[in-house]
Image 1 (cartoon, rainbow, N blue to C red):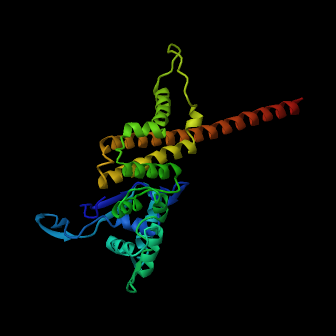
Image 2 (spheres, rainbow, N blue to C red; image 1 turned 135 degrees about the horizontal axis):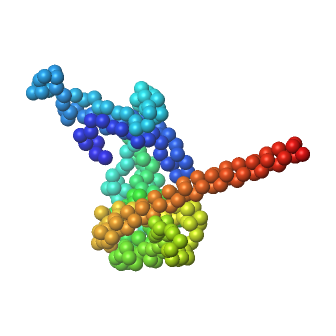
Image 3 (cartoon, one colour; image 1 turned 90 degrees about the vertical axis):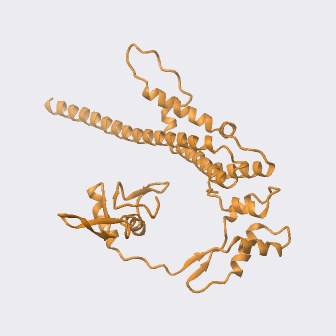
Length: 318
């Protein structure tokens, strides 16, 4: 969402977010930052009087509320909380500084060492702090062995949006860099088959087709699935799909900066949408499985309790 958008009101659908493990409430600064997008100076106007539509006054105040009334207390608390003052702003040294220092170092110097040196040499005023590095040390160390790459090309990959704790995303990054260094174009149809994404989506599509197929005494028997639904609606499958989504996001990010090799963005973009749909399907299945398990436990307990009560009643009568 652009910070210059002409937005007069914000309606929060929820004040919680998924942090990868559980639903957690948004922080006060996050709520204020999102709510602050409502209202822009000189953008919205309102009549000065009900009968005078021509005369208008500029307003800067926006409106913010929640879809769920239960979230309103948290929203009010956040909006009334004081603004946290920023003590320092972080600044990164320009690429030229890294390039200049790099020319003074031996060719065998690791890129992560270069980042540390530039950070140590940087001088700022009291209102600013030098960022320790321009890019991820984990990334530069992972691609250190790949050649040939220019200084600027390594800088691009060093700043790529990749979670190095995700083994699939890390493997994708290294594969992307190796292909770039070798001058091999990465085509989505080939890549999706090589990394297993194609097969993962086939399993989801099988389960989706089975779910959508009507069942009646006259219909033919359902085909056997390559994976049972109970084994599909799991955190492991969800994590795998999320990893593929990160790989595609990385590819698209690189396609804007290095389009010569990462040239198949026209296929990567809709493929990412398909993965997003698969993630939604698995999440819905996990939620249904959880509710169904609770229902079965509750039903089983009720039946057992009724049997015990009936037995006790008959024993008392005897």
